[in-house]
Image (cartoon, rainbow, N blue to C red; front, side):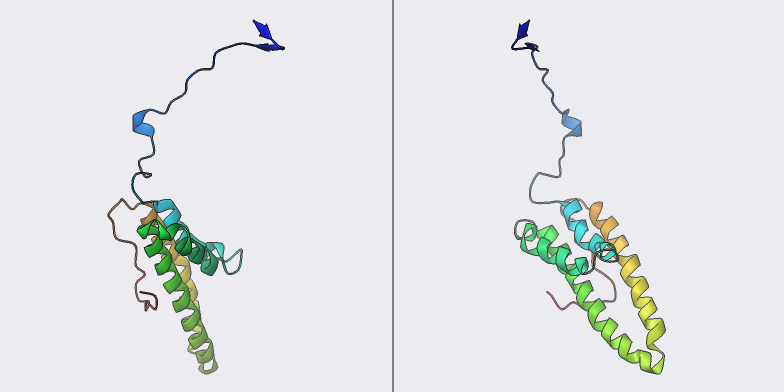
Length: 141
């Protein structure tokens, strides 16, 4: 039947099967959001300072409700501080030429380990401990 120029057809009910529903919403756990804190280091090669801004925003927003996101954002901020301090020290060491290979190693470290951290964080299940970067000192506890 036409009613105001439209056919009056009943709408079909759409539902998601139980086996396809997102179970990560149960409790306070979101591994994908937590991994964003680690992906920020790669994003910062395109958009400057995202390796600082994204973890800070996650820590102060989602991190208030989700301890897993908070722990990963804190670890990403620790990596940022480590990278900043060691980058300055290695720049000073460039005067005696030892700083050049150390800066290259630091750059490689800040590319490889955030990828590993993000992948491990995305695959985390509820109750897993957050990824911790090896070799860095942790200023934020």
